[in-house]
Length: 87
Image (cartoon, rainbow, N blue to C red; front, side, top):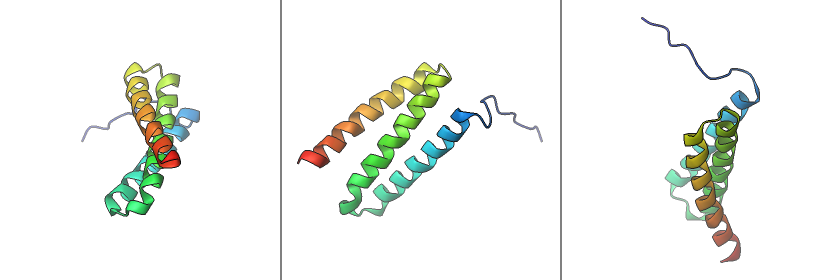
């Protein structure tokens, strides 16, 4: 079996941010899948925090695809946060 080597930095700040952001996104998705409408705001906040974290990682890695994707996701989710707060 061939060993797959990681090409991303390990144990620097981006390593911690990417794993923390990934876990937070998974928490948000779990909340969404639960179907509890009273927790929709928490899903949006968790997903937004994860998107911001992944945007930071993309920025540090100079990865435009990660930055664009997570910037757009972050803007959409932030609009959702504002909707929850003000409506």
